[in-house]
Image (tube, rainbow, N blue to C red; front, top):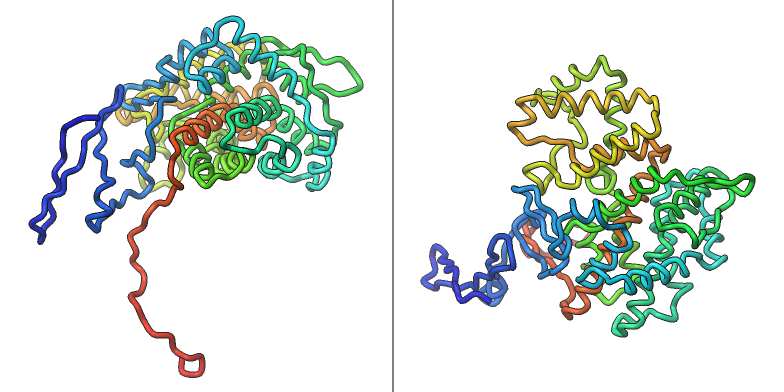
Length: 428
């Protein structure tokens, strides 16, 4: 706790309000405005762009310098040297596991990948053309009706059991949503496969023939999971923490996160990239699209460029670009949309307008290209995002409960009608 003070004076009042200035490990200092309420004031911050809703030890972002740290480890190092389950362990426990801890964690996940057979009945209740995110949101929330043996959020063992269940079963639930949407039988998980390979097997396998997972695609999928594992107090993570502050069960909290992630301004951004590429239509139209994007009077926007937090290059995009190149080279796919994307990237990285405004391709741009290249249907893009983000959501849920946080209750600036008397219906 810093002993520095910020002093707030208000026109028309002689009182000076003292507010503590607090410093984190790294990053900007924070003015603690908690005392304002007792003085008859509170702050207005639409979108919470200047408000810290909590303290956290999990993830740090410096958008100006393009830095993303998980528990102090740069995302570039984790993506290169780690795997998704190890990153999940790190987010949940604060430290990287030793060899035994890693083996035990992985084994626990692999032992709990199956779901109760009756869960399949939930999927059967959805129309064949239901969006996979709708199915995932509903089924994740419904898991509390199956696993109500460990829903005491005040019991550390119950929290641990539920955490492992969710991380283990999310790939299975995601793949089941896909299989339902195409009318194929679900594929049971294989515990001899790693996390990403198992997901791909459940997605693409069928009972009629053997399916071999391409290791290049499996590694790319694992990196997608890593790069989406956590991103500080984003909309969906804040939603999980807010829902958790009410004492809601963890399945309900994660379902709330899935719902928030579904928004096109959040998890649906990589879908928007593909829609943009389809709108451009052909490589010959790329230069025209770039000119339109520069025109402030034109509503056309280049999706997958720039980021609300990063005012420099998205560090995740650097890793994803390398992975994208590896996948495209390994598969040798021919797709007009991918040709458009590569040309768009080439122009944007060299164009003074984009460089000056720091509108670099972000992680959604490259992840959308990779997912399209390996055959993931568009409506599954956000499902895969949710799968990867589950570990981060759970880490924040644990941290929030450990801090004994009060129930979240934002305030508002009321601008509606003043007090007025009710008028009887016959006199209106």
